[in-house]
Length: 459
Image 1 (cartoon, rainbow, N blue to C red):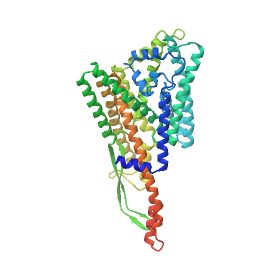
Image 2: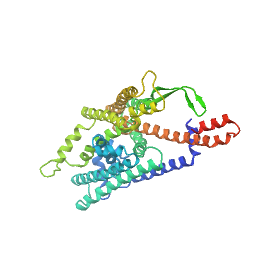
Image 3: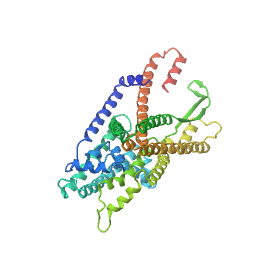
Image 4: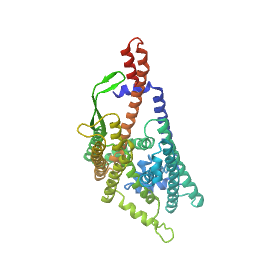
């Protein structure tokens, strides 16, 4: 089936161009990961980061695709864009002007996108400036001073802006969700290296062979469980009565409304991780002695980072709470999951859920189904993102925790499934267009029944 899908994709010129464009962009992204930020003593910074690798540095490195350990131009990664997107989404539910923009369709979406871009640039510059101050305090800068404090934030902001731009280009000209594809590419690129490092730990005796077997078994089991749940659906039956279409009477039909168990996809863990990564990003580079006026910024950031670093219980509680919140928030903010609109479309098309009255009763019923599914979906995401990480940390495989942990595997599997679905949609649409283009030629003008059949197919 997979081989047939690849062959079908290769036969469609537009899809072939989109896949080729996406691969080219990802190659450019991976090359940029190895372009260092100017003015940094890379060897000394690498030693400092290695000493803190047991903290959330691994998660920071995961979201930047390995750019942080090289301190490249992509060090900030796409996290500023994700953080601003979260803020815009939250404000759009409370600020009237943003809520009105969401209702204006494509034009409103463009305005919101422009606000997101501006906010991303501003946040990336602030983060870059704070990082430049922290790097100077740690003594890893060749020529500290005002020039370094200007060049570094500009460089890091430019890197984030470029990633934001290529993510949008993937959305328009490539295949898949641009931001998610970039994050997935960074994770996948680091997986072989992480696996080799873990195997080396086993060969040197740092990691027991039994522990390695448990880790590998748990990794495969996690992938299998994620794939199983991601394919699960709750199908709500919908009945359509007999109708007169043209000159024919159609038979009554029973169809289904498919709702995935994890309808929110990979967005909740990405959003939750991005929020947790923000204070830790500063803590990695800001010295405890760093102050602004009489306020000890370094001490405040250090304390916050301590509570938000695994394997502390506070980190897992905050992480799970954020995942559950973003699951419900994302479903509520997506128009495709609006029970009232779904019920209205069903009613206008003559469809109804058996045993449920059309209109408000159907909307309430669908709302209950979505609420229960979202609850179970959020619990599933929490279990997948937390339990594997806890197991790997307890067994001593720190590097394995981030690039093979539940969050990373969920992102990789989720993005892969979504991208495969988009490719499948392209193939189905192409085959349908080919069927449509051939159908009129088969309709003979002398047969009334054939003419009616042709009109039905075109509809």
